[in-house]
Amino acid sequence: VPTLSVVIPVFNERQTIVEIVERVRNAPYEKEIIIVDDASTDGTGDILDELAEA
Image (tube, rainbow, N blue to C red):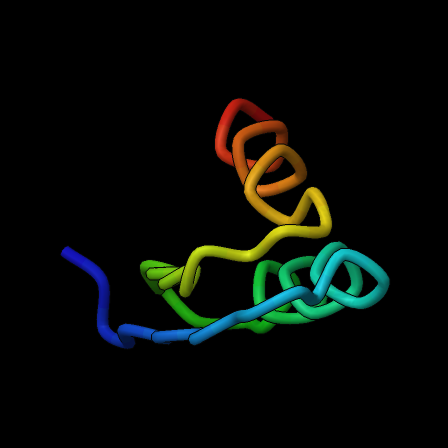
């Protein structure tokens, strides 16, 4: 059970989303990461799919 829920709203964040997610992943807490994509058109969704598989 995670002790922390991190919700990250995104829209066209292709340039920064990997760094953001990696920083949250590296935080020293049991956590869940919830990313809400508001219909990005710059490929953010594709990157999020790749991150979800990692």
